[in-house]
Length: 95
Image 1: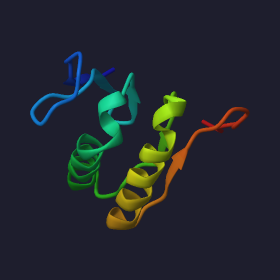
Image 2: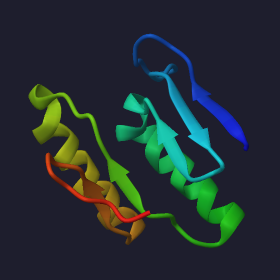
Image 3: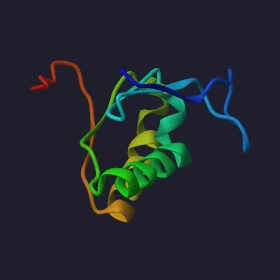
């Protein structure tokens, strides 16, 4: 198992991100910092390494920030030309 710490900071700023952990180049855990610029950076790095973009499912969003995150994710999805799914209560995921 490969574990990569993408960020380990307690707040987001221009130079720091929230704690984010990538497991086996597939799963990001506690990935608050992946909802904006770091998500794009990591997806482009993944694509360069693997030759494709992985499926992306964002979960555990703060309801107060959900609309802002949804707007950012829709823009990023358009830029990358790949779907990014926002999780919702009751969503079933087939692994």
